[in-house]
Length: 213
Image 1 (cartoon, rainbow, N blue to C red):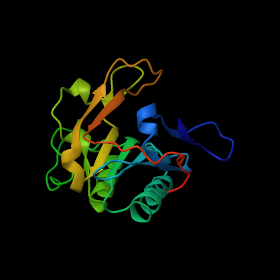
Image 2: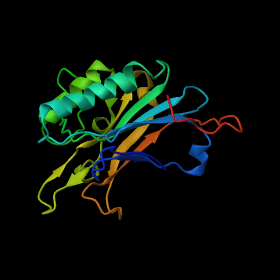
Image 3: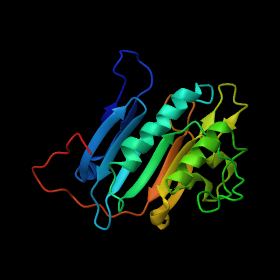
Image 4: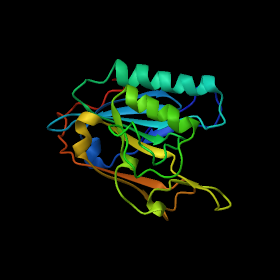
């Protein structure tokens, strides 16, 4: 497990990555950015994989907080540090409803999203357009129950706010994105399964993953 948490003593927020032994042998490096972003780079044969796990501010958060999150994501993850040839995936709880209407945005999302886009969804879509990413959960055809990633406590509201976005160059490597219901995880979120066509490559022996990218 690799995690990134707050440095002010408050016990909220935080993101983590958990790898099995096989993937861990291919882990090249990782970096805890802050309590909302953690990134890792994984060695593979054709192109290395850079994965950013995120926890975005909710729709009720202040605009400054939302702007700071996306600014940090762009500056620390997408602009300065990731090699251009890497497969790049930005995923996690983006707290964004992108909806199913992809008119004018066909290159960045499909028609298989759920519901209607909200303000956070507009911001996330603009982020994906600006960084040449495709929103994977809107591409693959599934029943609505396999698109719903969040359920309200009263069971009346279900949204698709967890996402996995991949750079357009490697869109064909993305096999599927769907919500998995019934996981015993003590959360109002459903697990989201993202399948990627990738052949891992074990890093050289005696080289533990370094804590930087």
